Length: 245
View (cartoon, rainbow, N blue to C red):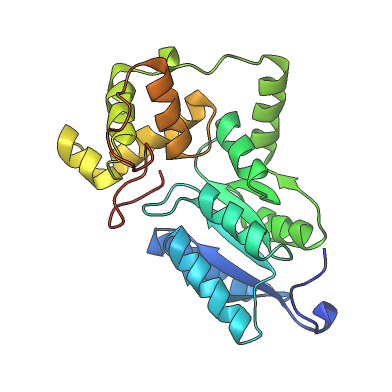
């Protein structure tokens, strides 16, 4: 993979941008990567939109990242949506997804969005560095557990319907189709925002879709949620609410 700037990448550390909604995770990754001789952290963000803005700003000053470590499950713009935007706007920037979830469908969503790797958050530090280096070489690095899940999904494919959802997940899906944010779903169901976010992530994985909008459209098609009565697309919250898992 060619680097996103004209200087010789062999003469400088690999520039890494870290995206995760948990400050403690960002601090941990930053601390480790700063100890790796051939890497440097040049920015961080707590959600997808903040990442897009930060990366755009780095391009303006001529210091764009080579690799973005991207959490997938975040409030606001989710990691899959942000990954697709980054790979579309900045094709020379590689994105390595990091998450706690191993569902094959979530992996497919991230890879289809253009991710150059997929790691679990409990990966060893040297594996994170290996994934970053592989992404710089234009290779796809998959956590062994992820590769196993992908193999199983290819060998034993299963249909993706709302029948696979639990009663609670169906409740959440109906609210997603109404355009509610994770916090609004949490308030409506008297659960925490993180629990709501986890439910949404599980729903996307079980339905085999990569976004809330796709899940909402499927819910409407399956008849468990009414079609929107306004011109606003299903599953898209008002501008001040979140649009991702």
